[in-house]
Image (cartoon, rainbow, N blue to C red; front, side, top):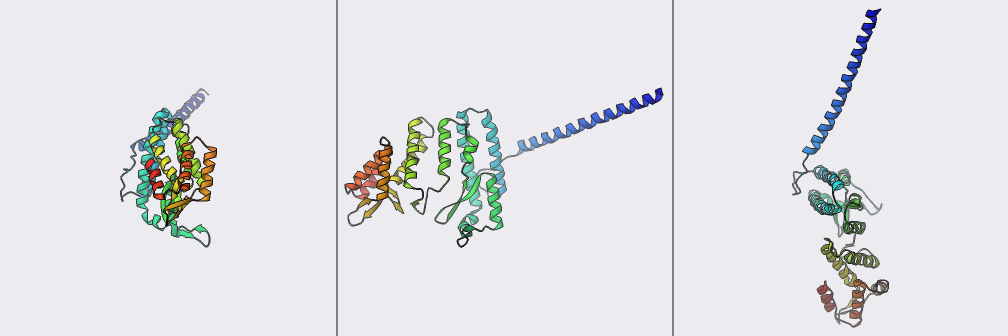
Length: 303
């Protein structure tokens, strides 16, 4: 009987020992797997931002994904001011990779508008284009028709706010949010304005308020430049959407009714704004039959 008890104890000890060894082995395998994955991630190097015909779509997309993961980890420990710089650098990197992708897919971009079926009012993409579009989406990119038969690769709306919201300083957050909203639709195409005059006026007021609220922002130079271009388009229009009708024999022009109405809306709603001041000035110049060339010189000279 004693021998039997001893035998059972020995067997039980062996089983327990076996289980412990198995558990240790399994933990070791898991840990080895994690270490290997982390090692592989550490060893990965994104491709150069200088374009190369040797690179494939997947190479650029993987690099873009790697950079996003990298900056998200960095920003978690950064101050908002540090993240402002992260945003600036990330913007440049994405711009360079996007340019490389456009160079890589020139043939697709050139043919893109031809994939549209006017009878069915829809696109009919071949499989290779569908595959490229699917790859681009992984990195927050898409094909975008910009007019005159031209197609480019753009960052999809909502992409930057999804990364930088509540991570940067207030001026950068406002800038990122507004530029993202403005990217939702094309601004102009075929030398003509696409958005409405009122929408353009509202953009001007936003950026004017931005400059007043954040006069020391590092973004001021960029914002002021964009504001001035918007203001020129608002006051005089573009080649195919001018704000006036030129009187060829006199060299003067007559403001279009819709533009005069928009200027008056601006003057009434935002009387103290610089935009309203300039709108009032342009109304006066056209009403005084000032030659159009002189009006252009005055507006562009001030810009």
